[in-house]
Length: 410
Image (cartoon, rainbow, N blue to C red; front, side):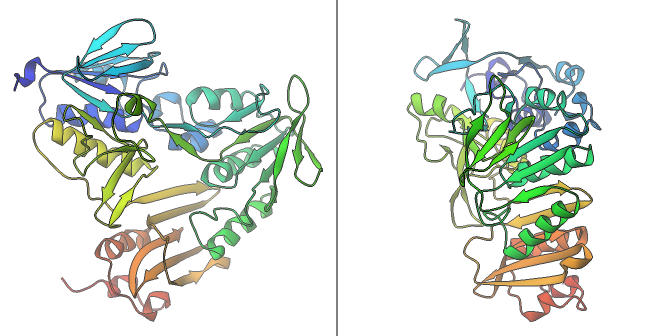
């Protein structure tokens, strides 16, 4: 094997996973060259605040950065922005770039993330119909966020609801259009959905569920959203959040196995021993779930990136984390741990009407997931209980019994 000090590790993708991989490599003492290639001009940055504090204008762009530019330089991490990789030549271990250059690598990390799922509807290409995935997207949206203007939000998932909460607080008239019978239907139970629907409606959001969007009217900009029943919603601009498509094309064209993500093992290795992958773009084995899964979360991006860096540094540390997620809407923080799919019983602790409660999901008597609203201590304990797949009884739904009393004896 070549001297690590002479090796070049190239990281394709400048999101949380790409930035974390580079940072962790230096923490683990990797002495060689580390180069990050990003399609956007910004250094690696965090995306969750885009639909929250950054959209609200309370967080400066620099606060999104995983590492400030001067810290990248201090750590000897090179960054090139506005660069698009078009091809991986695995035989020659080279990357072809859109500008005609080639870059050689000894080891390659694909942290390519994903892109906003497009709206396949007439008029969706209008200049005032926006996804929300990048700093540039938010900058365009913020330029239109004057009080009294009308915004239509397509999608009642995390992104759509977070955006609605920010815009209505800034004095905009907001309509949320969700095709399913309730918001957050893919990730939580009706009780949690009902709570957030009530919160948004009380804040002044016109929230419509079981509503199909047929397209957009107006030229050059969209002025109306056309609904499935033929009715129309007047709007000044549109934001949509209907899911993410993992960026797997580079890997697939290079002949790497892809199936709803780039296939990796618990050490973030692909089928090519010189190529690893981390973050939203990967499909990895989950010891916790007992199956393969692709996750879209900061926690997954960071911890899988650390596993990738450990593998590259010759200090294997398998990725075996329990997934968790969060969402901020108004004064409420929804924190989720585990994946609730396949539960056969749900126990509610606390009263949603009081604005702080938790939903616990059991399968075969064991805790597999939990959703907590404004209960940070319950969430921390739930993370331990879910990781243990602890057997639970009815006391889990009894708020008079402290949750810590249900932790199994060591």
